[in-house]
Each structure stands twice: as C-alpha cells, then as structure tokens.
Amino acid sequence: MVVDFKTHHPFLSNRNKPMHSILINNIKELVPLSEKEVALVSDAFKPRHLKKKEHLLQKGDPSNHMRFVSDGCMKVYSVDEDGQEHILQFGISGWWINDLYAFLTETPATFFMQAITESTMMQVHRDRLNQLYDEVPMMDRFFRIKTQNGYVALQERTIRSMSVSAELRYSEFINRYRDMEQQIPQYMIASYLGITPEHLSTIRKKMSTQSLS
Amino acid sequence: MVVDFKTHHPFLSNRNKPMHSILINNIKELVPLSEKEVALVSDAFKPRHLKKKEHLLQKGDPSNHMRFVSDGCMKVYSVDEDGQEHILQFGISGWWINDLYAFLTETPATFFMQAITESTMMQVHRDRLNQLYDEVPMMDRFFRIKTQNGYVALQERTIRSMSVSAELRYSEFINRYRDMEQQIPQYMIASYLGITPEHLSTIRKKMSTQSLS
Image 1 (cartoon, rainbow over the protein chains, first blue to last red):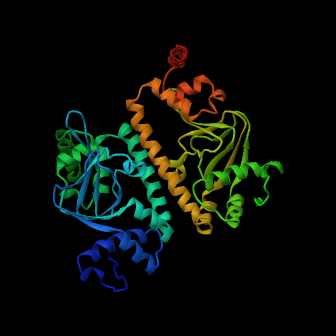
Image 2: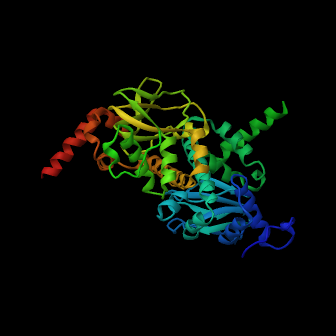
Image 3: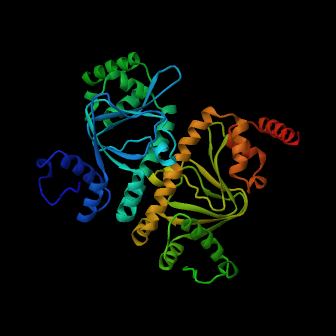
C-alpha cells in the first residue's frame, strides 16, 4: 500500500496511515526524503499487529526483518538453561528493535521478541530492504547512523553492566523509558536490570523517600 | 593529493599511490565507485606514517579520525588501574581500526593505539567524512556495512569471551591473523586472549604435538 503523505492530517484517514507516518517521521528526523521516496519506503514496510503476549520471534527462528515499533510495547529476552528469562531490551513507539545479530548474519535468532501490550510493528524483509537501499540511497545513511547508535549502545551497556550500581541504572531506565514505565510490570524491569524484584522494590522505596525529603 | 587511478600500474609510481590503492580496493570490495568518486575519496584520506612503537592515539585524546591500516601492524589496548595492558584488537593491512565509541560519541578515547611494526594509516577527519557522505553517497553504504560488521563482531566477542576455551580462541586467532602472526610477539597474543604467556605457551606445545601425531 502506498500512503499519500500530501494530506496534512494523515492520522485521521485510516488505520495504516498513522503507523506509516510514525515510521516516516522517525526516518525524516535523521535524513531527508522526497515524496516519491516516502511512498517507496511506506510501501516496503508492512504493518504487523500483535495481541498482548503474542510472540513475534522465538529462539531458533530466522530473523529476516528489520523492525520498527509503531505502537505498543515489546520486549526482547533470552531464556537461560534453568528456564529463567533475561530481558535485554524494551521497545516502545518510535524504537527500532531486533535480534540484530541474527538479522545481519542470517543465523537463527538467539532471542525472543514478545508483545507486552497490544502492539503494531512496521517490518521490511531483508531482500526488500536491500532493494530499497538502491531506490532510496538516504536509507543507507539512515541505517548507517542507526547501526552506529546501536554499536555505541551495545558497548555502553556491556561496560556499564560491569561498573554502574543498580540504583543508578534504574534512574537511567526511568529517564530512557519515561513514557512507558507505567505499562511495564516491575518484575520485567528487575529482569532488565539484572536484579531481583525485591532489590528493585528496595531501590524504589529509597528513591521515593529521597524525593520527598 | 588526488591519485590518478587510470594507470594500470599505480604501485610503481610513488610512495602514496599504493597506500591509497589499498584503501580504494578495500572500499570497492563492497561498493562501486566512479573515477571521480575514487579521486574524492583518495583526496579525503591522508596517510600517516608511524615508526615502530609510536602511538597514534592515547587514552583521553580526542578520536576525530576514521582509520584504515594500509601497511604494518597496529594494536589497540587499554591499561587497567594496576598498569596492566589489555589488548583489544590488532590491525593489519586492509583493516579498519578505531576507538569507534570515542569517534562516534565525540568523547575522549578510552583506548591506546600503537604501531607494533612501522606502519602506514590512511585517515579521514570526522568533518571531512561527513562532507564525503554527501559527495559520494556510496560511502554511506560502505560504512553502514562496516558498522554492521563491527556490531556483529562486538557482540560475538562479548559472548565468546564468556563461553569459549582459550585453546579454541587461539586457533581462531591464528586463522584470523594468519599473515601477521609471526610479527606479533607472543606476550601480546596472550594479552589479547586474556591469558598468561605461560598458558599460551602450554597451548602452543599441545597443539604442535597434536599436529605431529
């Protein structure tokens, strides 16, 4: 479907338009796109609606799509040998989330990707994306910058998980996921921070006491 | 300096030409470049010759260049609180090496970069590179792919350092740095693998016994 972005009120028209316009606005924050290029990009990305708790990706699946969260809240997690979940990332509206390693190397996914709330993803298949790079050269720049940011985030996360206190990491989490914190259960936040739910509860109590004093 | 790549024997002409042609060939392995674009890229990258043991980057320095090894052998390392060196990466002819985090975030370097042998780097300043992306759009694609590869390598290295034996990592090292292993002292290889020189010596003896039997 090619979306007509010439209208000034794309959100009022039909179901897919807002999903596509959130994606296009996200891209246009970094690179310019002509009207024709907007139409090409919009046509390449397909919406995928997910019910609450529905899985988009399971460990072992091929991960053939680049994925953008238009709406809702997703989580990316791994499961260890004892069946314990370890949350690596949350994804909220405007975020790109993926098992990027599996996508880039074309190897089976090592992570799970699941909807925490009802969500809408915008997805493009690897083959279509590779064509799109030729049709819209600015997409090369967009994903160069996004991949650079992903590289920096991965390195920072590796270093900080070794050196920064759980309390500080929780403060950073609140700032980073400001709009979404209410929708994510506390036990999932604890898993993301690599601490027990009880430890998180203690940190939260301490912080609320500090903010009152 | 703009290099004339129309000649069929660029290696025979002067000192800078082979350095530039190694760089251009490296880029052309991934993306096409017109003659005009080759000239623009060649002009943007400046050679920097290093003597044996000379430092190119020290912790705390700004890291403003994207860097390519044309010739020689470099090492990237950190120094811990006890003054102990930890080698993160070697760079040989045809490799891109950098404190990429410092380069991308414009923060002071956390790593050191030093020549093991006499070496030649080809360097482009961040500001010039940003202009170059507009002049030669294929450079966006080239660095998108290179950054993706860097992301994958970083993730793989993080995971493998936790899960793979020193013996297997040494085998992989030999394969990866096949042409260069003779030039890198054993104690540096041990540092790169995160083991003692004695442990490496034991592994080497065991492997040479196995290959004889």
